[in-house]
Amino acid sequence: MALGYNRDKAAMPRTPLEPRFTIEYLSILDSDGNLDTTLEPQLSPGDLKRMYRAMLLGRRLDERMVRLQRQGRIGTFAPIKGQEASQIGSVFTLRPTDWMVPSFRETAAMLWRGWPIEKILLFFAGYLEGGQPGSDQHDLPITIPVATQLPHAVGLAYAAQYRGDDVVVMAYFGDGATSEGDFHEAMNFAGVWHVPIVFVCQNNQWAISVPLKKQTHSRTLAQKALAYGFPGIQVDGNDLLAVYAASREAVERARAGEGPTLIECVTYRLGVHTTADDPTKYRSDEEVKEWERKDPLTRFSAYLQKRNLLEEALEPQIDAEIAAAVKTFEAREAADPLTMFDHVFGEPPSHLLAQRAELAERLEKGGPRRSDEEQPPPSPPMRGQRKTSRWPS
Image 1 (cartoon, one colour):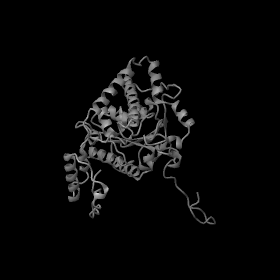
Image 2 (tube, rainbow, N blue to C red):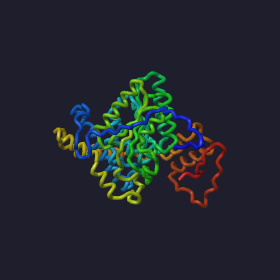
Image 3 (cartoon, one colour):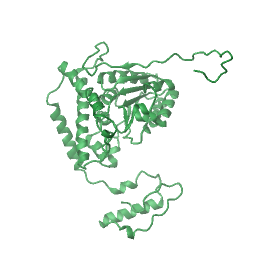
Image 4 (cartoon, rainbow, N blue to C red):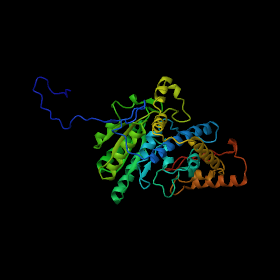
């Protein structure tokens, strides 16, 4: 390509600095059930059964949560249907002492990491406690703002490296996150510092209603890693075996001090972006049906069936587990409204303390809220403080 030099003069010679890059694509068990036995990972029958159960639990909980949301029993959430293999195949490779950093669509991975079902339900019902990891969990909570968890994940990896801890960090995000500055900043610092982190991009083809082709002109998302000096690989994200194999290699590299890896899991969101979304407005039924034929759960169950590893009565067990968790969740007392004032300021300003005191008094008296006519106009926020409503609803 000409760079503006005078065509009448001899062009200056150009020296290639880097060879043309290539990105590998990995698939072991395809959607037609064809298995590449030369690449098949050596997983024990017990591990295969555990992984399938985790995928099935994620799917059935997802379906139950949609019904709960439609009934008004929990709030809006992001379903995972179709992305179970990307999550379980990757998170399986972590040790309990490693760190898992989710975005907002990692229910299956969170279940694998020990998050109780009832706690996940609490989070989506608006309870503060639902987002708090257990004291022994090396996980960050659900992150709603897109890509903001990625610099935090790199910080965790840098801290582990600095302290000499034998720890790997695995950070999840979607294809839409790769259009955010936080993604590129995290990738850059991960490469510069050579930290032990594995970036798992669940490329489900849609960032809400924006298709991948309108987010990037890159042929793959995996190739973005090369600009930051570390490997990237694209895998069939609906193939549990391929995701596991790529993730295991990336985790081993990170633990050996060989730095980050970006794994692009090519998958599909079979359901809605969130329960406030209507995907029929922006994608076709034909597209969805084509991806339904690649369903990771169907594919892996067929693989297990051929190996005589499918367990009977698994569905009733999972249904009973979910039902018990829902019962525990709904037996919980109503959330304390006063917690809305917590964790906003390190030192709460006087006007916020006044609002909290007034709400506490009203709750104690059980009286009605003032009518709009009785309310004085809100006072303007002071410099450097967040604007808040004077009269909480």
